[in-house]
Length: 399
Image 1: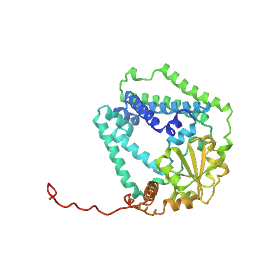
Image 2: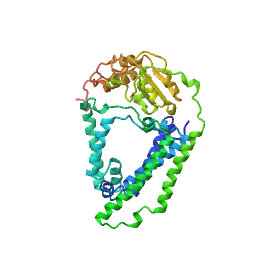
Image 3: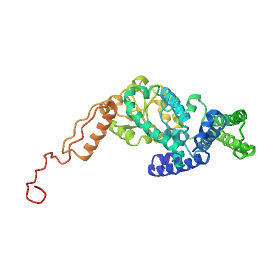
Image 4: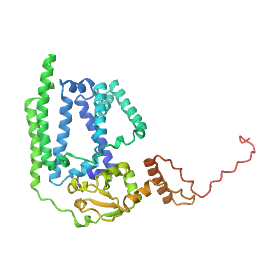
């Protein structure tokens, strides 16, 4: 069991939610104290005269990254498992469009979605209006998404990470990002001096990052990253032999997992990426028949990984055997999944058991979500559908 994040995300989901709320309050408090509840301070980063937003956010990202890299190196946390639990797929074109629109909204409203909530909690009316716009925009997008066709899933790369793209070990990559962050911080301060001098503004010395604390911060980030790199010399244990025998799951079992507890599973589709892009298991990654070797599964130890092959198989590819976590395959391959998910289920009889009715509702909901076809609700339990007899009038208010 890796402490603490994957445990909180899987076995103790309720405790994980409590921790998430506590972290959310702490994160909001830090943002408010850093001045992120003020639109003028947030948009100043676009004008170059106040890079506080860049410094605070980048510092938080780098601190979390180098800390996790160090903990992963000594075996206390599984970096890849945390990443796979906390991130979504990488859609290149949709994310590029979404990033552009987010930037336009940020500079127009003065807030991003998170800081608008901080501003609203601070009592700023513009923050509350921006947050209302975020909610309204989300609702509008949810209604328009079915009309967008395949665009939301265009150029889906699955869960793609820098260590996969560069081929560098996670600790080395953490050190490089920390060094890049230090250079960016120094460059940001140069920009501030240039733009502030042009505007001839007086800056409160208390708001400037003093030289000595800055050196300590830089030394801490670089030192932790170097310690993480040093852990590469530690021995790595091989996965247990018992985990090399994949579990065989029925399409219904897979549907229950991906719909009810998606944070517990990672689904890899081994079919041709073009076929996968047309129809696939919700949340699955289109890796193709040869792409599984590029995922670095030996560094991923999530709760369970499910493989979907094109043909009927009960075995896993040799490349997947490096995965140290629980490994499973879909019984019957894609043909069985298609027959289960894309075929309308038969209506259960009125005398059907509760388990049969629940199975129908799960399959009908999945079929509706994937095809858009609406399914009728199962008949009332008990076997009777006759309407109750009307009571004869006899006084009182019954007529």
